[in-house]
Amino acid sequence: MKEMLIETIKNLFSKPVTVKYPQEPSPPPANYRGLIVYKEELCIFCTKCEMVCPPGAIRFTYGEDGSKKYHYNPYLCIYCGECVRACPKPGCLTQVEKTAPPDSSIPNWDELERRAEKSKKAFLKAKAIAKKSGS
Ligand code: SF4
Ligand code: SF4
Image 1 (tube, protein in one colour):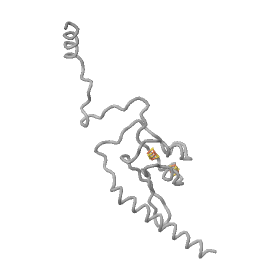
Image 2 (spheres, protein in one colour):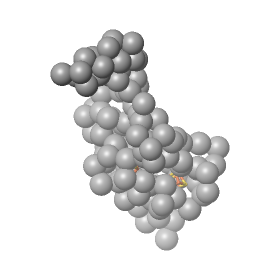
Image 3 (cartoon, protein in one colour):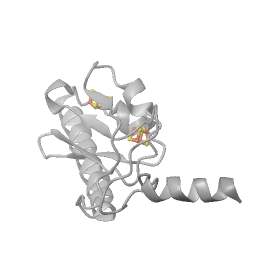
């Protein structure tokens, strides 16, 4: 009974052990593998990151001239780090100890995936036609 009373009094004056999530972000655990950060200026657009990503959280859309644009869905990402390991350019993709912000706005991913597929097909078709007419 005495120990219980001491413990109760101690708890009355100690800090709460809980966090006010979602008003305050919960701190990531030690060695937490978090968000993928991309540096376009280092990218050679080889698309290896897209190819190895298990859930398809990285997609490239293609321009008519063959230019590619990187897209990343932090809510689809399972933070496995495969894209970082596959990237041939050091520093282009890094994994930071940060979680996806709760209020982050990402584009409609279903629509983006359709656009990525469509633009890739159109680019490959145009490339094949150009190759055929060139030979
Ligand atoms: S960490 Fe894994 S799931 Fe996330 S983008 Fe990279 S390969 Fe995809
Ligand atoms: S693997 Fe690296 S260099 Fe290749 S497209 Fe992805 S981010 Fe760019």
